[in-house]
Length: 67
Image 1 (cartoon, one colour):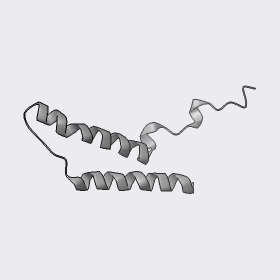
Image 2 (cartoon, helix red, strand yellow):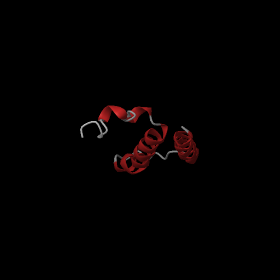
Image 3 (cartoon, helix red, strand yellow):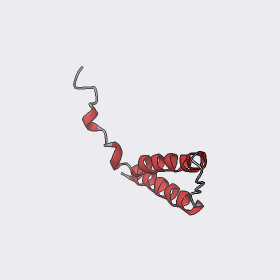
């Protein structure tokens, strides 16, 4: 029965996944504007940065499906 279970070593490391890393970066960048405004120095991340990261995430998912 132990042979049938998958181990953690079979999984791909988190930092090697393009889709997961772009999602994490988008989440962090989403917090930049409210936090910077709370500290009194408003900063807004340009829209093209989000679009580029979304494209990388979509490419990562597409690439994973093909493999």
